[in-house]
Image (cartoon, rainbow, N blue to C red; front, side, top):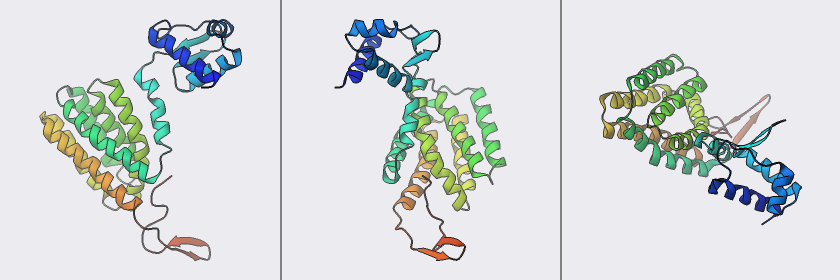
Length: 251
């Protein structure tokens, strides 16, 4: 373990033990380095690394503080990491969504409020209005699912699913661009989820959410595992044999 890594672990130990509580200010860099028996350079690198993952917050002219350590902060980097996954590993992300999202939708039936339902109804209307704009519609799609999961009151679950949905949303936008009936299918699936939630039917909500995520997962699996098509070059343009544009999944 390098000295910077050791410094990171030592600071984490102070936070875990409660000696550095959320919102507390760290001792000056030199004092903290001396306290831990490490160099100031190692301490500086450790502090910078912990800022990146939102454990620490440096305030110029004031000092360095422990953040609130809220799940939305600490799990924020999950989405950035998932964003780098490629092809088959993206199917793994969809598999995780298949496990978590239907369950989260089902449990939301017990705590969803009229205000949540009104918001979901508004988002359904926005999705219908933007049916010809795949990117806008998927943005409302993501907000729809975020609202449902957030109704559970579990910030960690919400942060995890937000991180998972961000990367797969790009594939769903691509589906909307190349599949003629994608918007209509998506709207119908979201309406079914809303109807189940409004009726307070957890198993129906689970099934509707499972169908919705599974539709995207199956489409993505077919596209990723489809053999590459031979490229045909023509003067002034470059297209693929067959009707499907390439690349099929956006990077």
